Image 1 (cartoon, rainbow, N blue to C red):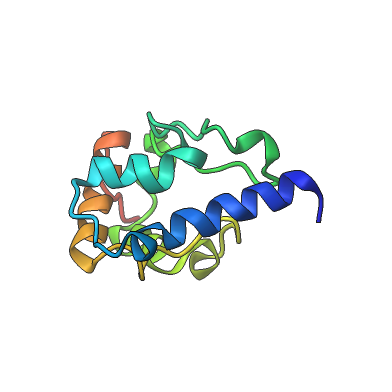
Image 2 (image 1 turned 90 degrees about the horizontal axis):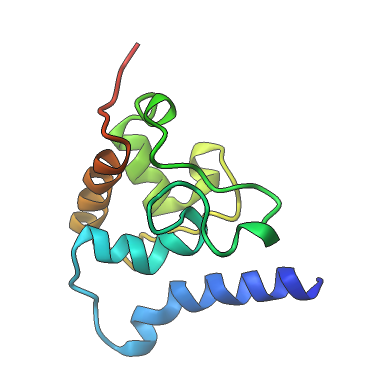
Length: 124
């Protein structure tokens, strides 16, 4: 494993375990949770341009892309947040947050993602 991969893995492990290490659950808004858990890869604005992208083999999703995001159901978005990217046939680099975020926080996160893309699910 090269240094960049090791660093990225370390960051993912830290952010996954942070609430458990702190001994508290983070009761925060979806925007705060997004900035804490998602912005390193997806960017603070949700545009897929986070600080980790130069070291990633798969580029993170642009959550402001209404065309793409309107094709993803709320259930798919929640599943990705809860179970990670592989759960919806996406990148292994997307970690599961189901042990970190409560079901209510994941539901709120999905709604926050909808505000980033200014879109709703367009079932076709």
